[in-house]
Length: 148
Figure 1 (spheres, rainbow, N blue to C red):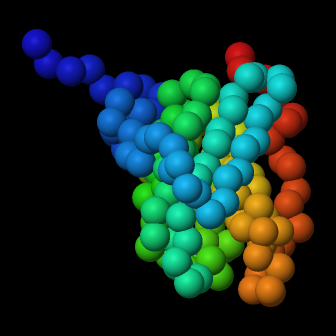
Figure 2 (figure 1 turned 90 degrees about the vertical axis):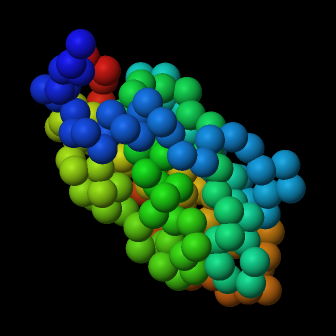
């Protein structure tokens, strides 16, 4: 039996949905970011372990559709091993591009992943005011969509 190709999602999206990376929780996390979208019910939580200014480990827990799981998984792959300064620059577009694209109706999932990262980095900055971490203002862009 041959596997049919999904007409809506790239192979990378399907791979990260069916075999997500870095799933779980970091018990002694240095930072945690949680975001959710009340319209569709997607909830993402990111856990960061930071050593110096490098993100040594990252895990996620996501309640949501396949695209939400795939974008969470890809976000962890893009962030792991990066400095905080590098991680700040990772956008929803970076996540979508790394997944070889998302359908327009699912781009909000990549926005939610970006916001979860921003939230976790803000949590770290709040807990470590002496580190003078420059973060962009968090703009919540993920709340204006529906799951149709």
